[in-house]
Image (cartoon, rainbow, N blue to C red; front, side):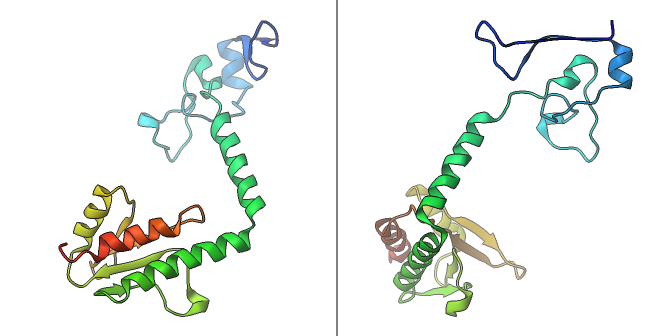
Length: 185
């Protein structure tokens, strides 16, 4: 016998698993290729993708690892929420949050990389202080549980990027501005 499969449908076994599987070495090497590629059935040291797919030896080549059902269900719920709220409302909210932050920082000594033109506005604000290093501001924000992205441009200048989303509040934006505007930084 070259191949033997027995499905797992009873006694609490998962419907997408095979309970019994036998494959002779000659059949496995010549006629079957795995349908799913995962972290366990290919050669991927430390789960780092390789340029060439090399399947694991023996039966392990047919066991890709656990299915990613929970994150897929979460993504489905997130997409449903985005669809329910509507992309125009989400866009309007994000642009309003970004504009509010920019307005609260503009009177102080900040330089903005993000465009001013209404037609070129985006969902994030990139800026830096003329008095305080961006790295120090990023650390101060992190100490206050505010997550920003520290970026470096081609001229080796550091910038902060704030990327609010529609679930952020104006109170959170006010808090970010308050931390950044502190005179004792």
